[in-house]
Length: 196
Image 1: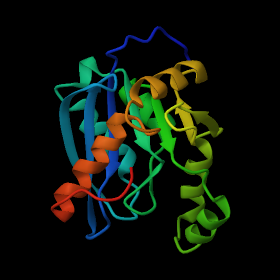
Image 2: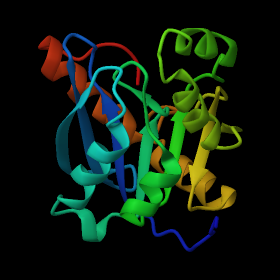
Image 3: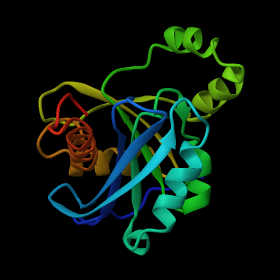
Image 4: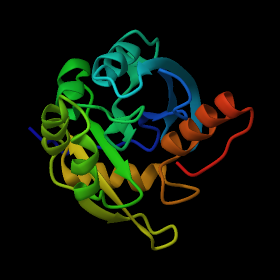
């Protein structure tokens, strides 16, 4: 069920991104923000490169956090982490009780994704999880007119759009995701790089 609800300016949002794929274990970083202005905390865990543990690891990381009771939204940078370790956003919503918003800079190239998944013995399972994430919506955050794309679980489109706009204060990417990316790449490479 998708819900629209009142959104406070300092809504607690957890943005999660992964680090570079340098090892079998891939670090994921979560940043806890009040709206888009104030970072309250950082979470860290590890998932298996090209594994199927991202949903469980992220759920556990969230539920074991001291920030859990205050969190209202989880934001993901796409649905694939650590290569093709796919996050089941419906399952993540069910397990944590927190609505999930997926943010993508570009519309996914599903033909390339399908082709890559043919190299996995469980590629069909991964494809089903990707499809289950639902409809992809285009959104312009008004920062530079460049659209981003979102998917959602447990939240209505109007509320999801409002939260993405509220937290996108420096670019068209929400601050919790932008900062999670900076931290993850900075830890792995010694200096942040790339775009969230």
